Length: 133
Length: 389
Image (spheres, chains in turn orange, purple):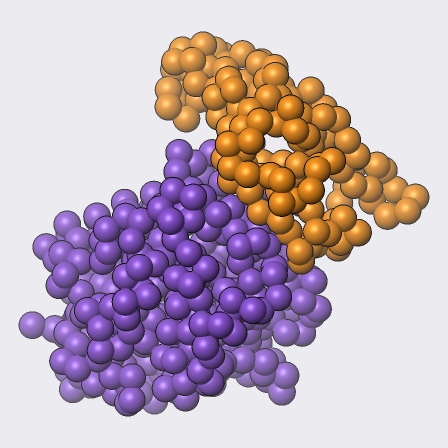
């Protein structure tokens, strides 16, 4: 099901946390969008790349005990919605700490990790996960 | 717009129907609905089919033509349309059919909803269900479908003090209702403690917080209200259809403790009918997870925001309570064959308004509401049904 170009297309965002900022109204987007949903066509050509710091705090958190095949080896793992300091929210795994330690409001920062691979001899793909700040 | 009535309803039992194929189920439900309305296939002007993912569940696309063929409609070359909106596919088929009759384009229309989920492994089913969420920005990071609702539940508990006991009360209540529904997948009661002790899926959600994997089909027949008396003494009117969308991914939402699409669709539905939440006698709401029902009860205006759990715990949504919710057993106990679910919700309201709901009958029910959700709240479709005045 997975195909390399599908991951490769999004690498800029997933490697460097690059989103977009609408220079018309200032709204931040992660992932990047070509059009601001608030400003509509007024924002066309006015969306600017924006690199998020990757820092934020936990907005909600769950520990996943039943995973999809690709992440089965990791379970249980922790998934969180994180409120980014610059605005907006992002979904990611929190790693390198015990699930019980992670509470709503906890400070986190992004880190570059392997996300998965297409079988044993397939492409490995990478992206962000989060650790305690 | 013409007023539209439901004149026939039929459904298979929901469950693990290993001896029935997708087409077997679709035809059984359809014929039960046609018999209920005393109609033959020659009289049908159009067919609408709600189905989420036959392509991945049974490797069969183009299922509208398939069902039309096996129902005998193809010999009359009847138009047949499949619609998809994730978990709300069934309600979307109802809505499309309603609009086609209300507009005057068609007179007699059949709506079928069907999903065959048990021909593949549970792991594959889970992957398909999560494809109604955002594959590029949620699933790839390890999100499962339950985990996204778990994030809503965890935040709801944080903001409003919703408890494990409250979540468990939803599942126990829906099993109690399901035990009175002969078509339900689970017809046995469970205790709230059973839910609280069931294996963890994605904290805080446990196995018995989740709707099951199901096979099933459901069908209804619609026509203009002024023609309905020709076919039945007990038509049920569709008073309104309302729909709203929201972002596909959860991280784009302002709030994850409400479904904005539910609130907006509900407001439209109440405004168009002049009804208030307190005018609704019963509701079938989307309880794919226990937290979803708690949010629905709040967002539909039955209980104040944040108190849906307490409201449930107090028995107000049980048959005999203030506003019975999911008298059929809901997705949790009746079962959730995805494309069939929205149609089955409508059938429950039709049975209740006709007074045919047996042991789970809500006395003197006149107005019922259905609430069907796609993804994590990216699509919400609400219908209000009533005994014609």
